[in-house]
Amino acid sequence: MLTISNLDYRIGARALFENASAQIAPGWKVGLIGRNGTGKSTLLQLIREEIEHPSPDSPIRLNKGARMGWVAQEVEPSDDTILDVVLATDAERHALMQESETALDPDRIGEIHMRLADIDAWSAEARAAEVLTGLGFADADLSRPTREFSGGWRMRAAIAGVLFAQPDLLLLDEPTNYLDLEGAAWLETYLRKYPHTVLIVSHDREMLNRSVTHTLALEHRQLSITPGGYDAWLRLRAARTALLESERAKQEADRAHLQAFVDRFRAKASKARQAQSRVKKLEKMQEISVPLAERTTPFVFPNSKDKLSPPLLQLRDAALGYGEDAVILTGIDLRLDPEDRIAIIGANGQGKTTLVKSIAERLALLSGERVAPRALRIGYFSQDQMDELRPGETVLDHVRDALPEGAPPSRQRAAAAAMGFPHEKVETAIENLSGGEKVRLLLGLMAIDKPHILILDEPTSHLDIDSREALIYALNDFEGAVVLITHDVYLAEGTADQLWLVKDGRATRYDGDLNDYRKLVLQADRSAGRA
Image 1 (tube, one colour):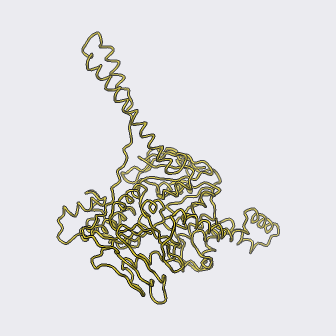
Image 2 (tube, rainbow, N blue to C red):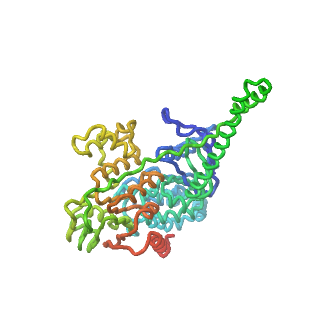
Image 3 (cartoon, rainbow, N blue to C red):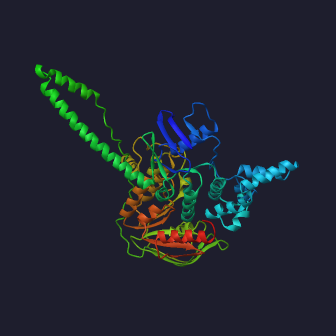
């Protein structure tokens, strides 16, 4: 299906690929993994460009006649409905439907209708609606114009479009960044059943374990493909590393033995020939190299020295929203205690972010009570804060402003280094940071005040798998309360011991675990005919 042969690619002086090769067979569902900044998104871009503009010596080739699809950008705001936009992504059907309205030649009309029947064009609306509702759109949304939706929802529509079109090679770059837990669960199921080939960049460990048949790893500017999901690849890599280390240890022992003979007998005439043969053998030995694992900078959330008695915070009979005409949640009775670990679940649009903004006092209550000690400090992370970072200023500028006034430069740089920004990175302008680096900076700035409660609204969207693992360790070491909104099941399962469900204008404790909730969501999809 897709062949990559001896791919070399550089950005300036930095090499991303050096003689990299891989082959993907038809029908494989392949997860593309690698650290932030290694070139995963670049590889998808190269695949698109090379296949759209092929050359005789192209290192990337797709089977002749195969169609490729990807999400280029969000759907443009217009008067076209969401459903019509998705239907239009099937270019052949769209063109035939338009031609059928103007064609006059009876033979051509017959050909059009035969082809429409062959491609199952008459069920297209139902299939498009199935994809859209699976990704979280309500039935009423399908007839709304795209201009009425936010950028995030228009990106979902773009994902729906490429899924509906069902290309022979489907390229997806972190699609779950735009989905809630419910949408991610639906997508996992959809990809498993997808009839063609998929290449997906993802840092969602559970999706990579549940949805892919093979894992394509980008490490040390090389590509390697192995059967199975992420955990299977991780076990195989560990086994390979252990084998290489064993072979290297044996080689070093052999080398030491040969060298000892040479050193002992080099000057002895009767042994000179034997010594020389061992010198040649030493020279011919191929060095066994064990790739060094890249170290992930840990996250650190310092514990507050001023301990507060429970409860840390209570909402009593609270109504939450954005004014009398935009009440989102009512009758909220919830409490947070020290060491609580809570994941908030519920479909997009139900009010999860409204709830955490109200807890963090970013949004005033419409009615009811918010009870908390005066000394309470809350650290709040939201992806919306990405826009609050100041372009033109550096990492060090942001750290300096967050520290107490008069903090010496050594402390400023030490604080930045603890966030993952060593001296060569600390002067980097905000606009030149990757998404993962911006997340690290925001989490680090949030932690400076040593909050009693951490509220994290989708903190992992731009983090690679190793950084997500590091975040789990840090949250589990934190002695205060943690409240999470996340579509990352692995993060939630590794951190939370309570679930709050936001649904139908209410927020209540959910008696069950994430697996129970996932089964409930998928069962609801099946009942609605969407699975």
